[in-house]
Each structure stands twice: as C-alpha cells, then as structure tokens.
Length: 277
Ligand SMILES: [Zn+2]
Image 1 (cartoon, rainbow, N blue to C red):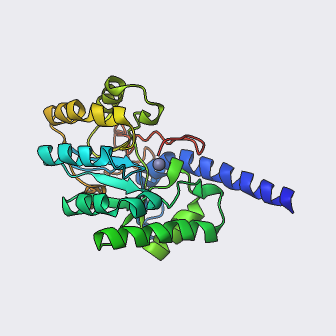
Image 2: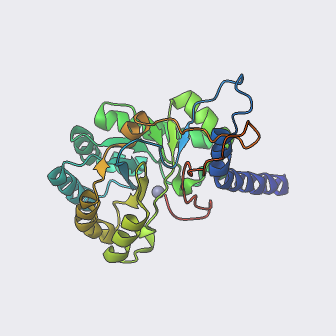
C-alpha cells in the first residue's frame, strides 16, 4: 500500500511537471490551429502572462506578509501609485491580518498562496482543499473580500486540481513569466537586472516580500520599469485586459503567405521542485 501510494505520488508529480511544461506549447497550438471551430473554446483558467494591448504588467509578491518588509514595500508602492498583487500565506495572514488589511485598503489585490506553503501537486484533494479554504477564510476575515486568485507554491499543481479549485472557489490559477530567482538572495542588483531584462507587456513578475534584497531592489526596479513606460495593474486587472491573439493563417489554407508567428506567451515554467513561487 505504501509503495502504491509512493508510485501514485511520483506519477502525480510527473504529470504536474509535464503539464506545466507543456502548457505554453498547447496554448500556442490552440491559438494557431483552430481546426475545430464548432468546439466551444474553454476559457483559460491558468495564466503565466496575459496578451494585452498596452504596456501593462503585474508585479506580484509571494509568501508574506512580513511584519517588517511588507509595510516598507507598501510605503514604496504608495509613493509610486503602483497597485500590486500579494500572494499571501494563510499562516502569515493569521499572524498579521492588519498588514493584509492595509494592502487591500490601498488598492492591492490579495491572492491565496495556501496555508503553509506545501507542494499541492503531491497532496490529497482533502488536504489541498483544507489549505485553500483556511487561507480563503483568513483573507476574507482580514480584508472583508474573498480572493479571486490562487498561486500554487512552487508553481506545482495538477490539471485536475486546477479544474476543481476553479470550480469550487472560482479562482484563476496564476503562475508567472518573469522570475528573478530572488529567493536565492542574489543581491538587489541582480534581482533588478533580471526583472528589467525579462519583463514585457502582459508580464506577471514573481518576487517575494520576505527577502530584504528584494525590497532593496524595488525602488530602482520600479523607477526603471516606469522609465521604460510600463504601467502597473493587479493580476485580475491584467486578466481583464486580455485581448485575443490573432490566429496564424494555416499554410494549407489557400495561397496566403504564412505570416511569422508571434509567440503567445513566453513563460519560464519552473519545475515542481523549484523553490520559486
Ligand atoms: Zn511561495
């Protein structure tokens, strides 16, 4: 029985890793193919970036709130008039509800990042439900508003989990396309340069408001992003701005010259074992 369980867990981990890796390619094909126009297109529930018309991006901060660093970051965001998204851990919300309340009051979006940061892709449905529900409750109690987004810790979640969590909680599942690997604490200059190099319109930028170097990197990072013309919105606002991707004409159809395809998304899906997210 134990062996069987282990095998199941391994299979689940493999599937979740595969699903994450395969997702961008599949979306790309879906946008390009359109071979079965009769089939209704299922609305996307997972986003690692959003196709938008305009220089809009979403800054996201995970794993907080931190008693010291999150208020510092909130001060900075307020000074820049920037709205961000915080994917909070339930345990930390229970400890510092007033910080989460402040973030929500100041216009930031609060998303669910589980109760204690486990690997959801390797857990039973019952345990995942408890992780998500407790955090949903803690956020509601702190802000008076239910969250609309889930970011799975480590980006690890199975296709099946995405579906039932979406159905039960109404959440969109949010990953990212810009990852400065700030959890490795590479220093503020590296965090800044990675974000500046990878961010493009529609990007969802991942970082963590529990690392001093990340908070130290933010003043100049935000200055530079603003200088490049980027505009900051919450993740839900970014999703609300999604525009359809123009389908690629199929080479088989008629004599039209095939246009060069524009990549739909350019995510860097992290393996399930990555401490990112
Ligand atoms: Zn996390």
